[in-house]
Amino acid sequence: MYEQKKPYVIEEEPGIKQYCGCNKTKKPPYCDGSHKGSPFKPFKVEIKEKKTVNICGCGKSQNLPFCDGSHLK
Image (cartoon, rainbow, N blue to C red; front, side, top):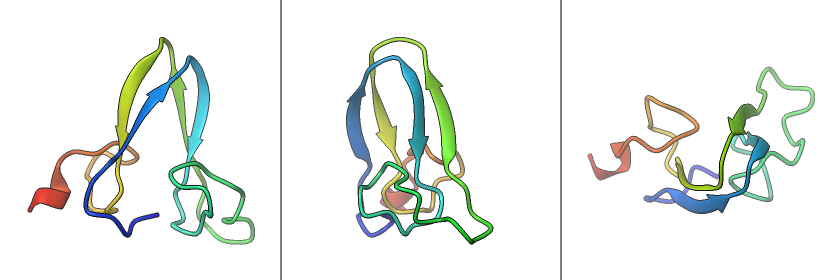
């Protein structure tokens, strides 16, 4: 998941989203359960209204799972 130099830009619908926190998912940026058996867990985020989100693709954000522009540095 953290192999690209830009965020995943996604139009999300309201609901609970689980974004990968282990970097092992096969369905980035979403958690697919690949973390099982490790100390990692997904980032659970409640989206309250339809909106565009920028999910970190480089793993350097100080605001994970969201992009903070760290990939530009």
